[in-house]
Length: 405
Image 1 (cartoon, one colour):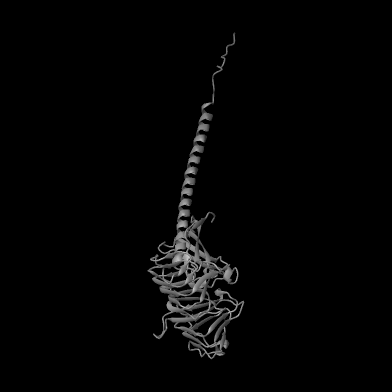
Image 2 (cartoon, rainbow, N blue to C red; image 1 turned 30 degrees about the vertical axis):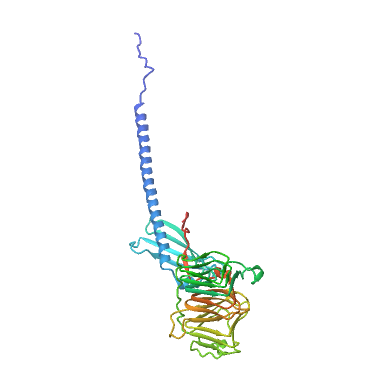
């Protein structure tokens, strides 16, 4: 009996469909998982961008809030290199969902102020972001010119020039031409020489061929008026050893008789209602002292008295007006005497300041009305433009964002 068999075809692929289906399902699963992961990542990235943007808005709002509610007293107490941390604050109308923290750093070397304001903003919650922005607040120079008069400036016979006490003592041979003069209203220049610019918000009257080495600009844009400062809260200066030595009784009236010398104490602020100096009386400031401020509410009259700032640093001695006068008798009149050691600044935007005599003055003056009619020399100290200022402003184009939180 003959055996029979069948030969299998070479083209048969038994069991091929099942692996194909398995591989297809696995591939589709990978695609689905990848799609879901990508979608989740996109949502997370979108949320991160949103939260980061909102945190940046919180930081920017916190910066503006800090500018608007500037902590005057604690900032004023900062020394160069010090910082003031204002702590975390909740933004108003944010529903407690946004906070900011401002830290103010003083960056100058002790002269004209410079503050970096670093603000962190954050969103509360598990996905809250953090962003940091920086702004800069700087001092506005008070004494950017030799003479300023809010209502009028009258200069007759005098010669004005400039020097920089941070570079060298005054020397007529090397005197500069930065002694600018400005009035917010009118000005009269008579037989005088001004080594600098002369400008006025009104007319400028020129008599007897005055010389102005720079530009003469009548009808110039009016400047922002200077602030009248508040008087110290604690009242007039109490009796201290140096004041008792000249007979001061603590009533705010300082009278220096001929021959008396008030030796000023380094780093101190004095506050008087009025000051009268007669004969050969003297205000003496030793060399190497810290800044001394003479704050006066009413009048100053130096009839023969003198100022002896022997260190010849105008930034060491200032005369500052404050508040409103206590009575109507010459309370807006300041008569000041010059001399070889008369190095000082005057900030009296509500006072008539009269330069008495023919002696030299070294410094700068801010006044309501300024008169100088003798043959005195007035030497503007350019270092005063770099002195600490009571005016602060946000520096333009200083906003920046730190890339890292």
